[in-house]
Length: 418
Image 1 (cartoon, rainbow, N blue to C red):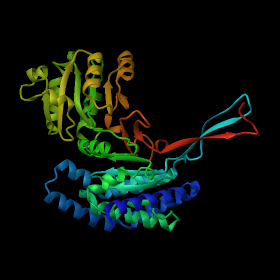
Image 2 (cartoon, rainbow, N blue to C red; image 1 turned 90 degrees about the horizontal axis):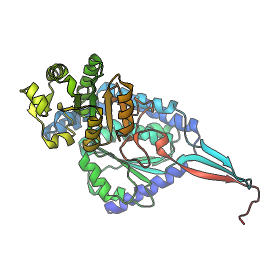
Image 3 (cartoon, helix red, strand yellow; image 1 turned 90 degrees about the vertical axis):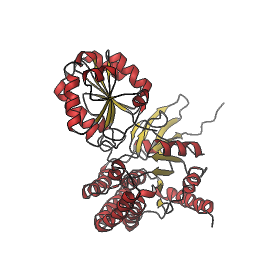
Image 4 (tube, rainbow, N blue to C red; image 1 turned 30 degrees about the horizontal axis):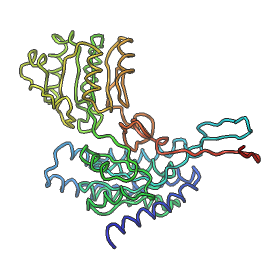
């Protein structure tokens, strides 16, 4: 068969599996997830061998340190996958819950209830843990999932998916509820996102190039974020000790992820004192600084920032720094150059906080905390399917509720419309 025909079968199988998933009780789905976690535990050696193969091939292919970091499956990251499955199993099941209900004057009772979306396609790069995290959330919400990972993590993804399938089927998971596309042919992505009538939603996770390509090819709905240009604004009323810790965490803890800070905005009143101090701190963390003219004048050894730097998602130990007149200029800068992902204000001034939260047009807005918390696990969702900077149908970290849609159920007693 051709690739088109193969993908058509994948889609048809997923639809059949999704209908069976919708019939499963919560305890059945939870048992499936717990069995998957147990199988991952039993498969540690297989996962390590597969990941080593991907890491070796990645180094030989010249992948940079950030991509290799995303690709690596350390023992602690395997622990996190296992804990993620267990955490999702422990969460409440949104399927079948009532969103709202009301009674009409004619006696009709109208109930709005959560139901599965159906078939969800996940297209992702580098991070193999996405295979387990997204599967857990899709199955908990009774959706079938079609996974298409990047070629750099091919062997790791295959090993994880195999463990999930074995574990799930031990507890009665419908066949083909979890499918991993086992080809690195890029045409498979195009075929997947054009399975109109079979795939209900596609969620791409990866770099801007991947997400734009998926969006342009897709004939089915796509939830996305193109990039994470995240900002932290240090107000003149900030606690500077807290600010230093937040800055280092937001930039340095894991620079290759979408919720890492890329631009630091600092109030002009802090130019003489705080700027030299934070530049020294960041240099000690091996961060390359690109500053505006005022930063450059105060710290001559930093690089000059260009217009392109304000739009840049570095995904590396590189940071642009700009001096602003106050909270309004910070807001204006973020709304112009940002990506509507995650932005923070560090300030003890309630009015500045209120203005920032109200006017920054981003999916997540922080007061006195690091942008690195934009994550489904950190939000108490167990795991996340992705982070959306769209405004429809989901925004920010997407957990269980965001993987549901709804239907209206109308209870009558013989009513007819006149």
